[in-house]
Structures are given as structure tokens and as C-alpha cells.
Image (cartoon, rainbow over all chains, first blue to last red; front, side):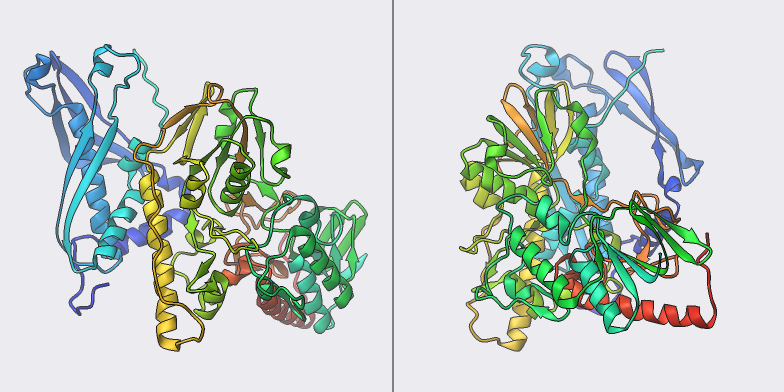
Length: 186
Length: 419
């Protein structure tokens, strides 16, 4: 644990998070959130995704602005590489989720962070998506995440921080556990 | 029929409560659906032994006095111990009486049974924290040829069909059954979610010696950081055996048990497992080491005699690529054992005291919003000791004190519990 007297500040309002959790335990229906994204095909493998609204706490919400990100495939797949591939965005989502978790858990545990960086790798045999081998799955065969963390904490505490951030991560759960997905065509 | 207090259940908690009421001269009856210590006679597998050593097995006014203080009782031993206790304290047990409904009446509580109705000022629920097996929805997707059982119904390896076994859950029940069935020569796969790794002995002493000595079992419900979480911590991976064997994922891996991640879902005969096994195991290792740190800190300060040097255990060996799915039929898995926890059965409780998850809202056993109603048993009811038989000693004393005061107030100003 942090031994200094300066208050730990990782820019996370841990008190608000704890209060929110306690409040939602009393009003569990408010804890039901729905996240949304829209996507429009532009051309080839290039498309544009936007996110703007989501629901939770019993009402609809809007982000402070609409966020957009583009999707494409690289030139080795005969595409034009105008944007990151969706699978890279999945890695980015996992990294973002775990990193937010590290910051929040560190704040709750009184650990001052100085730097947190991570490197992610997802391995994939593309014969799966190309339909070239029925025994090969489409998705990642494995994902590795390497965190590099500088903080006022022992190596064990840092390890516990990273382990706890996985335990509380939505994207980690989405990737490691099955989710029912329903796709309709209008 | 009228009495001051109806105790529901003649297990260790119900009987300890009876003794506490007798000490305070409070008129009561103990209603028992079967006979004394019923679940110990009927719902335990043959080889089961208590997680706690004999010296730790005590009730108010009765201490283990056999000659194997460091041994672990079998279920029949426990039934005999509780039987002996019921006799010793002269508990007013009415056996073969099933409670069908508890509700409020004009004069306190009405307890309906299959042998008449009781009216009483107070009720103590001691019907057990583990009456019903929690079976997840994944049971729906099993192939028709797969037999599905809970540890409450499991008896011995011979009672399991030939073929592979999938054990879902790796707390005390799951890991013990994996150990037993693998030793009996069956092909065992165990799906491992959040679990509590704990060595049987540490520095030459039983882990319960450390848990008592370092004050861990005295951690109180109103002092732990996150009570909801703490109450849901699964039982530790422990086994009571003459050899004081430590049972953990490494030990059962060495027996040939296949360790996979938490069961996510089943469909079309396929079982899907979480890819988060490595982190689940890492969390359990880290948590065990924090517990050992607490033991070591205590030993450092108190310098007890006859303890060996501090050390740490091998981290859990996690397979590099544990299977994420198994075709149950192709694998020949004939039996799935749901060691996914237990819950109390409160189906007869007709009072507005259950939360949205069906749990009784209580503060250390004192039920909120129902004056005169109490509940016993379960993780951290009052302290970490509450999970074990010895927890009854202090839990019943505190609750009997509260109940006694409540009766005093009620006499001075009669209160009717709100309907």
C-alpha cells in the first residue's frame, strides 16, 4: 500500500463509483444499461461506425459528442487500409477496458500510478475467415496482454491490480465468455 | 399451540439456539422436518468429512472429547455428535414436523406445519444455509443421455455411470468429488470459476489453527469491507483426511483431472468454458498468499511455539491452452455434477423479508423489518466462523440476547409485527 501522506490521485473518482454501486444495489433496475452503435458501409471493406446514445439509470443519455471510428482491412487482404481492422479495435477495446480498471482499482486501493502501458497481441489463423479450413475458428486463437506499470506499489500489489482489473472488466468478460448474439436483416 | 419461540430446524444451529433459550428460561419448541441432524444423515456423500478439525467442532456446552483431536468427523460422526448434544441439553425437539408456512398473526407469528399450528412471539430460522443446490441455466443444454446430479444426491463413485464426469465448480464440494472420482479411475473434467485456494496445513499446523490464532474467523459482518461479496465467497478447497492432504488444482491435475474454465453455457451437446481460467487461478493464488501473509504477520508478532518456517506454495499450474469447448457426447461424458453452490430453502416463509435475490435481509441474523424473527447459519452471518459448526457458539448467544431484550420490550409495550 501507499505509505506516503500525499493523497493518491489517479484521476478516478473512486468515491463516486462506490456510491453509485451502493445506490444501484438498492435500485437494481437502474443498473440495466443498453449500449448502442451504428455502422454504415462506405465502400469495399471500409465502413464507418458512430456512437452517440446509450440508456441506463432509467433514462436515455447522450455522449457529449458523437464519436466516430472507421473500419477497414489492410492491403494484404486486397483492401485499401483506410482504418484499423475490427479485430484490432477489439484488442483496443480490451486494452481500454483493462486500463480503466487498473486506474480505478489502484485508486480504491490507494496506489498512486505513474505510468500504465500495455501491448496486446491476438493470434489468428485467417484460413478460418477465408473459409479455407473448416477446423479453424474465425476468431482469435489466443490473446496476450502485457502490462507495463510504474506505481507506488510492490510487484505483488501490481499483479493483484492487473488480476482484479480483469475480474471487473466488461470487455474481458465479453471476450472470454460466450454471449448470445442475434442478428436480424430488415 | 402456543410457545414463546419456534426454532425451525434441529441441526447444530437450531439446537445451540435451544440451549441458549433454556439458559434464559425462554419457552420454545424446535421443529424438525426429519430427525435431529437430518441433512447430515441424508444429504451427504459417503466419504465426506468436515472441513474443520475435531478440536474446532464445538457447541455451547459441548466440546469434542474423543481421542482424535486433529481428525475430521464423517457425516455419521457429526450426526452422532449433534444427537448427543440434543440429548445432553434436553432440547424440546418435535421431529417429523415440516413447516409449511410462517406468517404474522394477531399475536405474533403463526407457524403452520403438517402437524398443527403454532403461535409464537419469535421465530428462529435454523433450517440450513445449504438446503437446495444452485443449478445454473446451463443445465438446459445438456444432451438427453447425460445424467445431471447435485452433490446433495451424490453418494460414491459406484453411484456414477461409467464414462466421463464433468464437475462444474471447484469449491470444497467440486474439488473433493474430482479427487474422489479421479482416484476411482474415472475421466474427470472440472470447470473452475472463482475459488478459494487454501492449504490443509501451513508451517506444520492445520489451517484452522492459523485461522483461529490470527483472528481471521473473528472478522465481523459489520466490519468486513464488502459484506455482499464476502457472504458469497465459495467454500475453501479443503478436504478432511487422515493424511491431512492438501487438495488444490495442482493436486488434482497430478491425478489426471482436466481443468477448464468456468462453464459459460451448453447448447447442442457442447459445453463452452470461459477463457479466463488463468486469471481466475492467479486471483486465488494471490488471495491465498495474502491470507498466508496475515498468518505470518501474526506469527512474527506472537512467536508461537512449534511452527515451521514460513514458505509459499507452488503457483497454480494452468494449462497453456485449456479447451474452450467440449462435445459432451463425443467425449463420452455421462454425468455432470453441479457443485455450483447451495442456497437456503425459504419457500415456506410468507413474510416480506426477502430481497430481490430471494435472500433474507438481516443484520447479523436479526431480520430487518420483522421484529422477533431471526436467522442462523451461512457465510459471515456474524463472523467468518459462522460458516462452521463452532460459529453457533457465539452467534446463538448474541441472537438469544437480542431475542430476550425484544421479549422484554414486547411485554412492556405489546407490538404486533407488521403484516
